[in-house]
Length: 68
Image (cartoon, rainbow, N blue to C red; front, top):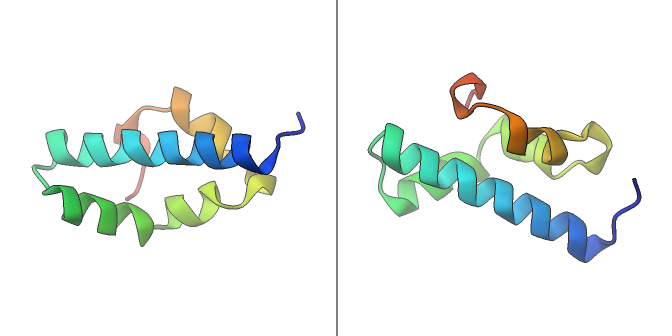
């Protein structure tokens, strides 16, 4: 599937939002702590590399299986 740059960024932003919400609710992190954890994680590195396909898989993956 070929995505435009805007489509790819929208999906990544949605994934980041999901991860941040998870960290806030399940790990009791503040908003800033959660964003910091996500943006400095291996998961985010993989999300930003379209070749990994992680940006599409994440939406259907349980957050419990993520190492963030």
